Length: 208
Image (cartoon, rainbow, N blue to C red; front, side, top):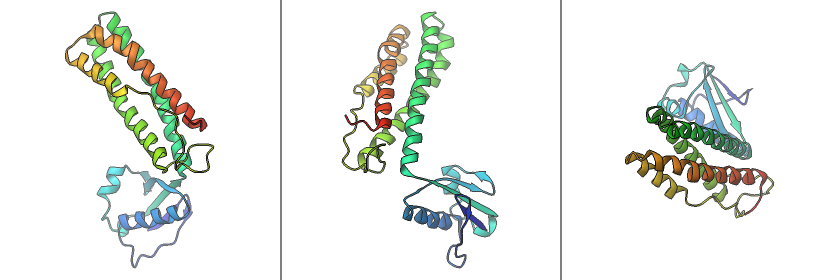
């Protein structure tokens, strides 16, 4: 098997590293020693998911022609996550506007699939938001413009998000479309705007 790390062919010992999982573990240790993080894995030219990686853990290296491991820095990874959060919050606010157009026109059948998609995206957004915030707070990621992530004072994240989402879900369960429209327009969308500002401040490395 041919092993590449960031495009460079890398030597490894087939006498003691015999499975896909063992090779990835060795590459992860080498990346960590260089202050880098494994960011993507390609097997025979095809990028694999985290799930596929777990499923292939015991696969013999003889079954693989080429394994290409991509790495990045924690700072670059944080930057990508923050950019993703900002772009997703902007897209969500547009989705909310689309839902509102249907609800204000009493087009409930048209609003329902838009709303379902919007809620799924909200779930993705807040998972990403939590991962970024906790990563910086724990010191795993360094804020831009700071020498160290540990102990840095973060911008204050928007409050009341959980309560707003609970009210939105309650309105949906009760099929109270007028209340749901009001919540989307007057609470959810402004809260997303606050999150976007929060991540923009984090990207600039501004303390709270």
